[in-house]
Length: 284
Image (cartoon, rainbow, N blue to C red; front, top):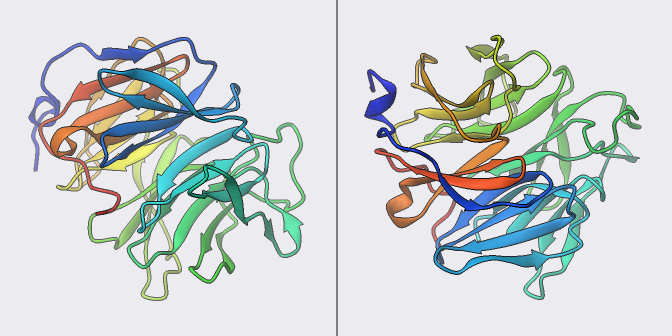
């Protein structure tokens, strides 16, 4: 278990990869050596290729936010504008996967992770429809099964946001932006969620609320939150905060050996080197 922040991240200045966006989010690294990320207000998914720069990948993106890949390497997107989860086809079309629960529209899916079983877990706060409270009447956490059915897992969080599994998938971390906490939910054998405990309290004086979460192969946790990226050991001990020129919203491991941390932060994207590889999303 690491003792200090420098056990995980060497001393360095973040590298600026690209600037000039409106609000960057949802970074995800593909093993074919490129990064995808959303510009929510810019209504575009961009692709960044090291050494070649940034290109538009999908536009309009229905104000996509969180992105990830399923077990087959197909891109999934949380759509604020479309109020749904979509799967991107081979022709780069955003094909709706799920957009309703109990016959009513979702709020605005925010972030998502894929379990090794193929089930998709996602959060559904109202950020994309605010100040509207949405037809659901609550801010949910859901699971989408491979057959397309949707299950409500939690309806008692204030503002569920980023989420990530531990390496053995026994725990699902979920950020509650309003309470400024990251909660640890036991994952039951039927893929329901047990009662949570507070993994880390981020209610400090610095600006920023808990947002995107990622986990490395040793179960250290990186959280976009107050003042930057928090590095937290598996016990929940805050080792330190990585600062960036802008307040981070989300992050993704990638690059050679999965030892680069890519960070979306307002108008730019950045990277830093790490000492412990990130947990891979899938193996193509």
